View 1 (cartoon, rainbow, N blue to C red):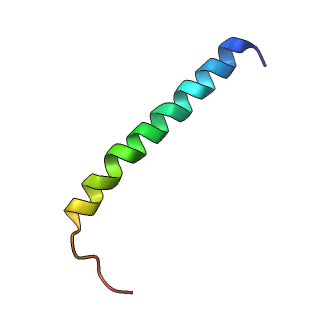
View 2 (view 1 turned 180 degrees about the vertical axis):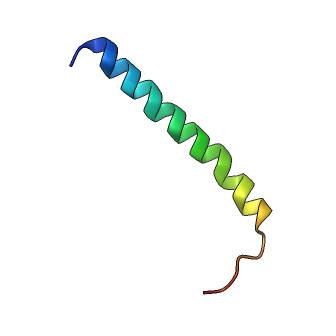
Length: 37
């Protein structure tokens, strides 16, 4: 695997992590009272 592909994968992972971190508070505030299981 060349350095280009490694960088591309690292960037993709970073983007996914950033989206998860940004989306988590949004879903938490959207559902302040989650339904009890």
